[in-house]
Amino acid sequence: MIIYGWKSTHLKQELLEQGCPSCGKQNTVTMAVFQRYAHVFWIPLVPIGKQGVSRCQHCGDTLNHTQMPSSLKKTYGEVKTRSKVPVWTFSGLAILSGLIVAGVVNGRQQTARNEAMIAAPHKGDILEVRIKSDSYTLYKVADITPDSAYLLMNQYETNKISGLSAIKGKGQSAFLATPVGFGRKELKSLFDQGMIIDIER
Ligand SMILES: [Zn+2]
Image (cartoon, rainbow, N blue to C red; front, side):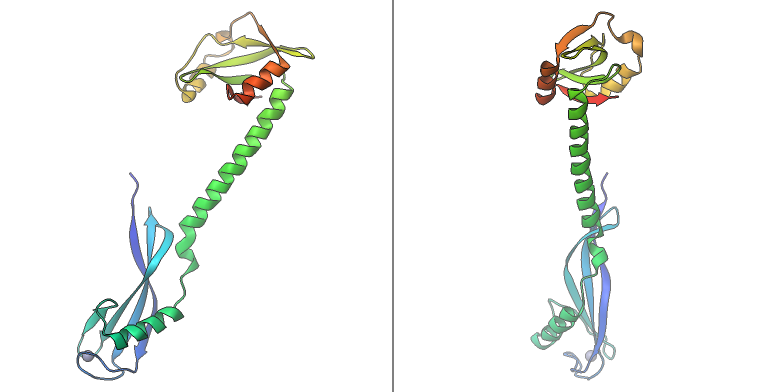
């Protein structure tokens, strides 16, 4: 369950010289400005606008910015302009962008790493292979020659990528004994087609 919503934080409060629209007294109206922000799990995600509330300390008349008469609305606009959006209300957005950038960088690094490994396989490498859309298994590199790799196929298949760890748990004896030869170029082509999805060395 994702908990989200919006909250407000108090930004600024000023005592106004101008008279109360209700009782007419001067120097009794305070103008408070609040910053609204969206949160996810109470982590501020992004600011979503300001709100203002005026309150007369004499007669108690309280108005939000949509209810204020135009003179008070104008003052609210001025106080609002002087109140800065706190940077921390963007924290969640910053965290999210950071995670996305890290994910992209990590993904690229992994692809580059796998590309290098598939170009120069090592004996003992475990390849995670997508046989078809809902069928995954493991191949193990048994031997290498200058232009071929000999792979031992696992006797188990799984219908989800996450099931591959269970196949790994079955140990070395789960690999068939007779290797199948693949040309290096063929291996690269399987990788480029997305059939070799990951390599464990
Ligand atoms: Zn008043």
